[in-house]
Length: 79
Image 1 (spheres, helix red, strand yellow):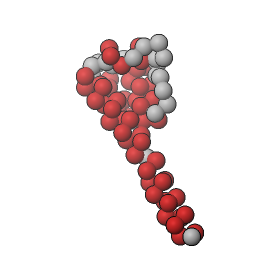
Image 2 (cartoon, helix red, strand yellow):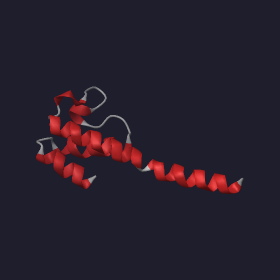
Image 3 (cartoon, one colour):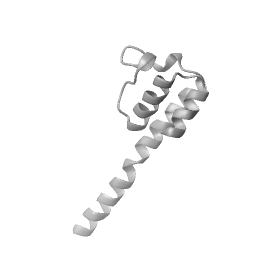
């Protein structure tokens, strides 16, 4: 998240938007603060920032796959 935050601030995104946007994207938690809140959207963000948010969303989802794999292995051994 720190890397995403720093990259977003280098893209010209405000500190509040960068922090809350990175946190929201990594956690797949919904709206962030400022212009990307529930009353706004990501259209005002620079193109590179949108790519960073997209990568954060993918990395946020990848965290759950090892849990699913471990659970499936445990359930297979239980049979």
